Image (cartoon, rainbow, N blue to C red; front, side):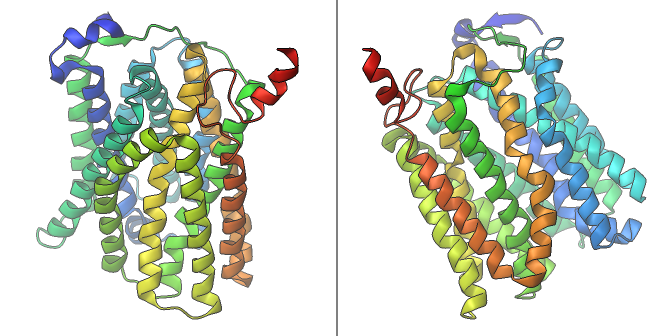
Length: 409
């Protein structure tokens, strides 16, 4: 992998350019991760007799590397970010491929930890590479297309499982090996076909926490908290309250993926046209109404069709989270992107360490209270989003920045 300045990459054929590499990695990751997730609950119950406590521990272990993503800063001292992204995908692919060969509590937790390190370190570095490699004017549109590509890869994995699992009487070992193997094949191509792209701005390789990024940190924290409520409780509600079976939950996932393929590129264009402030405000108003409507399912006994509709709309709104990336891209010093991506990923996962377990107890008493709390979080995010200026840039990170600077002018 020879080193090539990013400015020279435009001379390469399309199949060797940085954007193509981003798309291939966006496809490689969900082939392993989506398959691992789709089979996980059935596998751990059949292979290791997991109960509710065991699955809780598994998800706690799975989130630890996300909380420790700040460790990426130490790794990139010795390893280039592009190399780390590919090594992380290799770890994810290998861990997925061998999952079925460790059918015990200890084995599954160990494999989960390894795959989670690969997943979270890849996501951290990938976000950094996206913001360094994509021009600011094109970033929202291309990020939307990357979300759509990842959704398409996940859709292919789900459809393949649904169509072949019973028809060919597949085993967990075969499916995990096939999906992990496909990820490794794509990574091998990425390693061979692409040079190492050298961004024009060297990245700081130390922990940084800048006061002027405080709004970005706050929005990341709230985003992680809301995400946990959706991931943990929205799907659980569909099963517990409405009795959704496996194929019905899978159908919802497939609808979400198709919606993402259609709407994510449109969301990217909307962010580019209306700006991050308006896009995020629209997202948070929508999420507030969705979470309140989730509560209404319990308060007023609304039906299953509305619940399924809300679940899909909820998922679509999260595609607008790409506006957080482009907001940071506009306000950041070019050398801060890599270390701040690691810090932001850790901040985003703070809530994942305690919120699912804490709200699980609240759920036992009042599920609607959990969703009311989520609506409050969305409103808090809305208040933060309104602090983003219409044209964010260094020195104009929040609507208050000009007010603070005014007396000195």
